[in-house]
Image 1 (cartoon, protein in one colour):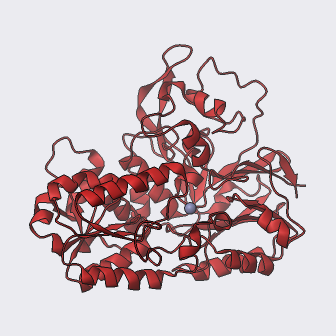
Image 2: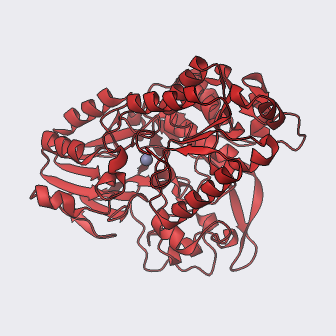
Image 3: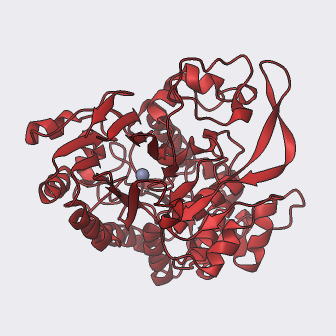
Length: 500
Ligand SMILES: [Zn+2]
């Protein structure tokens, strides 16, 4: 009898941390950060104390009470007494969104990571280019040393890597991407899931590419002594939609289905509930064609499908598409993982001449041309800037007179995001920029974003087709939606084992 324990993602959207146990063996499915808990305690300038390692995270319920964390993040005054060490033979990551991978770096470095090459490449690129945040040091890390009983400090210079197991074909460009671990000893990288040594672990792991709003998303089928399918985050349209149907077909052989239900809870979402990527492309193109001044498109360029849409629009409208340095770096990593290389057709906002520039940025200069704020200011109608709210700090330099902002990303679903939306409007009002796509604020707001998650109708079709013996809903605030439709539903409680 296998046990499924949901340590995160029960009754909340994101923060998935799912433990599967069979005897003395075990697997984790995702180890993400639950932003609904995090934002209850923390915000922009209010963050967990880095010197206290996992202490604050455990005390506030951001990490589950287990004893499988990195020794060097455990301060001497933290007693792990009573917290069980659970068997974790591998951590399987469904995709590179923070609510699925954001705390993985806190787990014992002896635990290997299993994921698609794209997911691992993206996580590494985000780690290289992002702020040094505990938990995000997932692919490689620098061990800390105790300063006193309570405080841990960065002590070691050398980075250590984790063992990585890639679930799809490993190319040379991927190997060289992942092996550029700074000053490190380097991780062991293996190309196949069978490297987990099936003779020792009585599980088989099948990784199926599925469609979501980030490339590399994977659903997992756990066989052998288990019979469990895990969707990760999933949708039925988009470029990988055939992957999604292959996953659903293969999952019919599985007894237990762990399924996401993101869109069951967001009442405000019907505005784009049935919007497809094609409609998004059509609507955005119409708006850009009518604008003579600056266009700003707000979406995550990690969503490479949306990026390709805007690249095509820019080309048709005689504009240059401009991304931030960080996004250029992530695109470079995705190209190394076999995705469409859009870098040669893009420009990067900013320059390469700053001597203080971070190491990761330097290598970009061979792949993408820079464009400065002054150049955009001289010819605002010549560009589409892929900017989010946080990049608008450059607007005083560009000083546009009017223009259009296309909000092509998910809408506010918590207070923090609502506050961001209010700030966004202050910026746009200040520069006389019109906004499209921000629900409740701009006229005709729908049709500029397609959700990365399955609609309720699609979820119903997925469950009916798989027809599992047991359904465990996660990543939703409305798990009861499932029990109203099917009898074999167990609504998980955080930390309580479900026998299946
Ligand atoms: Zn996601």
